[in-house]
Amino acid sequence: MKPCIDIVLATYNGEQYLEQQIESLQNSEQYHQLINRLIITDDGSSDATIAIINRLISLDSKIELHINPQNNTGLTLSSESCPAIPCRVGPLANFAHGLSLTTAPYIMLCDQDDVWLPNKITLSFQEILKKDNDSPQLIFSDKRITDKNLNTLSESYFSLKNIPTNWHHDIEHLAQQNVASGCTMLFNRALLNIAMPIPINAYMHDWWLVLIAKHYGEVTLIKQPLILYRQHDNNNIGAKKRRLTQLLVNFPHYLADFQTSFWRAVTQAQLLCQHIEKSKQLSPIVPTITSFAHIAAAPKYKRIGYWLNKKVTRSNLLGRYALLIILLITKRKH
Image 1 (cartoon, rainbow, N blue to C red):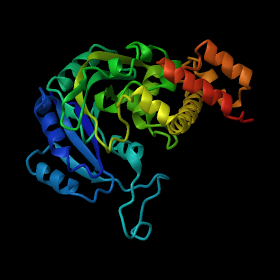
Image 2: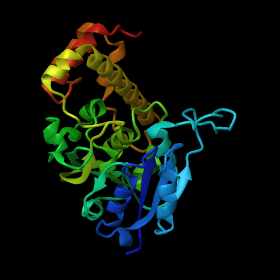
Image 3: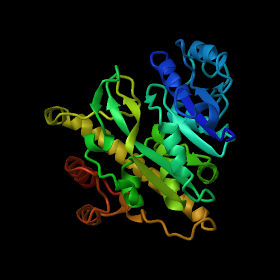
Image 4: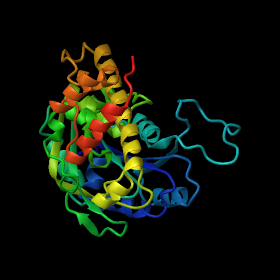
């Protein structure tokens, strides 16, 4: 079979774990048969990341390196704009740049610090071949949570976080809490054609992709873990489970983070509604996340009603009560 998958790997100061991650890709079943290009986009690393990549490029013709040329506004950076230190664009824009470089019918996303299990590429590809690839299709898997030395902390992300494995079946749930990590995804060109360009105010690239896939096509979960999801001090987004005492002691801090995250998700839901409105010719389906997308303008009695009937919700009890507090204390936006 002709290679038909591009992998996009976004890097930033990833020297500690990067080579082990790339080796896990290369040691995957059917890497040489199925992978077309390993597209690495770097976000201005100042450690040995670039040197590691260049050495690996000399050993593997599939690997290519691209330095992200844009900042968060999409403007090309000049040396005058950042004379002292490299400018970061962040993971969303870095992955979006990598996605814009892909040419293959199928795409996978890769973080710099995880380890892929040997059957990840094969099982994901087998699953997407069962689908109608004329429409957007996204496959994702569970992940095994490990510490920085790859010692297992939990066999399942869903079990660790007490999230039902059917959470992604409801787009309203998915708009409020993402369960599909980019590092576990395989999706098709039909999805990318609709999802790009990713709005700069989207919460995260992978969350946007799965929402687009859910509305316009299909999202499928492989319930077994296909990666080792490494937890360490520098994770952008992690899967660490906090003890109850830790949550109580630091409650104001966690609530503030939760509030910021919640309203960013609302903004993303609004962007999705706008996308759907502009693309009615692609899908006649009416947006099903209207309540959540317009929660900021809803009076308190409506917010409480949405909470009670679980139109606005979280997958666990503690999250639900934190959400209720946010809905009560945040002023209505007219």
